Length: 259
Ligand code: T3D
Image (cartoon, rainbow, N blue to C red):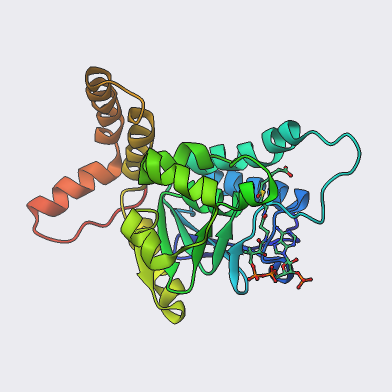
């Protein structure tokens, strides 16, 4: 696919996908939603991609739905969310490779949900998270009501959604919304450091770990234990597991190949 709204850059196993409509703070139009889904599917297919960074061009990460480019007439919000946003969020979660959001500015509305659907978040000091939905009389969507209570607890999630005030990066760190906060100038180097480390790790084990963590959010202990045991069978058959053990025994760093 020829991308008009994204930049795609693959280097040393790290795919960087940049939302690229900076003039509207990377607001999501239909084209961008389509392209992002395509890019994430390609990331899943291509063996050379071993981790992904999602970031935004310019001064924002993503301002959510493009409020200027919405279909007129008897537009169905439900259908739009189901066909444009839900597939992207599901793809981020089912992509069995580590995904790091490099939050380079405001992440608002569905833009915040995009960041929250990533596995890890590095945020610049000047970034913020905004549950913008109720400001315009909408319900938090694209997974906001799923991710927020899990990350910050129900009471805080109510506050963030009802009051819809921007959460600055340091507060986001305190709440557990992000993993690291760094100066703006160091954002991409920190994101590349994290994603690069993951790209040279045991990709299959990471993918199965992601599957276990997400699935077991909703499981009881016996079924979580059983699911882990089943996934361990798959991880135990990988070349990377053999290499990890061999490297340990030979007292040298492992050289993982991602399978
Ligand atoms: O439709 C459906 O399918 C339902 C799905 C909904 C999902 C959602 O995401 S709903 C939430 C939509 N997003 C918002 O409500 C956020 C709107 N934007 C803002 O509140 C502010 O722009 C920010 C707080 C994000 C940033 O404020 P600030 O002051 O730093 O920047 P600004 O001046 O407001 O924006 C700069 C430009 O970007 C400006 O254009 P201009 O005046 O320079 O020509 C602004 O209009 C444009 N822009 C920002 N956000 C959007 C946008 N244009 C279209 N859509 C946007 N979401």
